Each structure stands twice: as structure tokens, then as C-alpha cells.
Length: 150
Image (cartoon, rainbow, N blue to C red; front, side):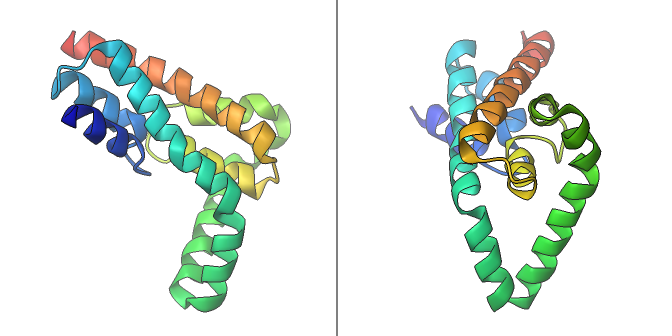
């Protein structure tokens, strides 16, 4: 049970996401691959719900109240716009899915949620697209992890 909880919370982290939680679950906790996959995907998606629902109002409030937050959000939003703008405009939904699906640093569910917010993609459309990307990313990470540790 402890391995499940750690895997779940590790999948929620903005840098690790399931890129970290899935290999840890399989290698450190010897978890069944299906359980590790499901816990990692669900854990990775939990923060997305809150990001999509509250990122706008929270970032606006923090930017007004705390100067360093204003600088951070300006940097984050500009970086996300710069990295994602051309793909989002050209490929639309497929761009968001593929951006989330690539299991590399600074791509994933957290950044996908920020991109969805920045490009005005509503929750009802953004969440399923991000979820699809997370599942694809999880499959890639699972395949790579099973190849190395399997």
C-alpha cells in the first residue's frame, strides 16, 4: 500500500509526473505493471483538474499581490506560448495531445494544462486531450521501463 501512495504522489509532481512515478513503481516497489500504470496516470491527472479550473484566478491574484509571482507567471506563460503557439495553431487538438504525450522534461500534463489555459481551451475539451496525452506518455514510459528493467 505504501508504494501505491508514493507512486500516486510522485506522479502529481510537476517535473517528475509519470515519467518518474512509473519507473519507481516498477523498479523500487516491484509493482504490477498495470497497477503502476493506473496509479501513475490517475496521479498525473489529479493536478490537471485543479490547474485547468483555477490557474487563471490563482495566477492573477498572486501576480497582483506578490511581485516575484508576477515575474514567474510572466516567464512561465511566455515560455509556454513561445514553445507551443505554432503547434497549437497549426495542429489544434493533436498538438496538445502530442505535447503532453512526449515523455521529456517540460512537456507533460502540467505544461499541457498551462498551454490549454493560455490558449483558451475550455476544461471540457482540454481535460480529455491532456488525459489522452498522459495515457500515451504512460505507455511509452512503461514500454521503455519494461525494456530496461523487465
